[in-house]
Length: 313
Image (cartoon, rainbow, N blue to C red; front, side, top):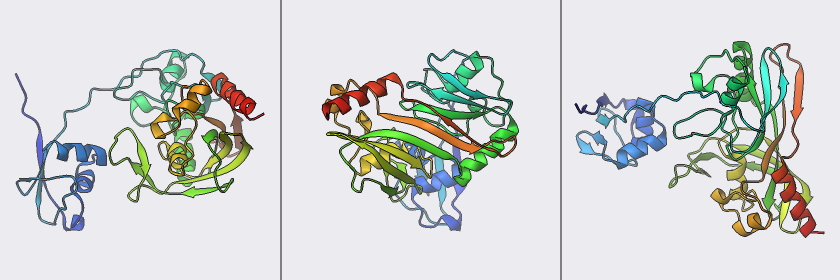
């Protein structure tokens, strides 16, 4: 037997006067702006009985009616060993891993590959923190295509205190990135808000409606076609380094999603963005002492670096 879709109707409060439909939906129903825009584009949103587009404006006292999306299938943690994932540190509160490329932090809809959480479960680690089961212990993430250091909280105490440090921006997150060309100035700060890309759901972009995002960079080594940068993140937005460097016309080498030159990536035999989380420092949740962990370059990044260095000799 087919089921009728769930429809919800709410009165628009005066406080949302003049808001765009997608922004109002996000506030009233808890959708992401992207999901809200999808619903409006699909004719699933009515404003006072008339079909509404995502950029239409709402007014206080209006009735907004939404055909709710079907619930997503539950996401399960699959305990599966992750080849190449190394344990850098382990104690009763935290485990620090060196995440290889091609591994997600946690399960999510549509992702069927390996995850850090699944790898830890397969290795016998027990994570006891609040939140959704598939995200147990995750206090920060790395892109699937980015390798390097990740800290996972094992206890509720660690989860709370680490999340607080990330929120207060006291964690030292360092990356090395090989970017195209030569940034000018050679060291500097990129302060530009990042939000969803207006045309592509899978991408992010510098946009006036985005969240504050700050990236500090310093030149380590210059080559003929590229520059090796040391990067410190002040904020932690999705794809932040990739978006900021691309916006300044110096995308990470191999990052075809954000406009990198495919011929350079092919010449260096690189099949992903040259970006690695090399250092992670924070106050240990057990006693407040400062701890730091470091990671060397994976083989594919080191080989590409050797090739670009040889080209410049």
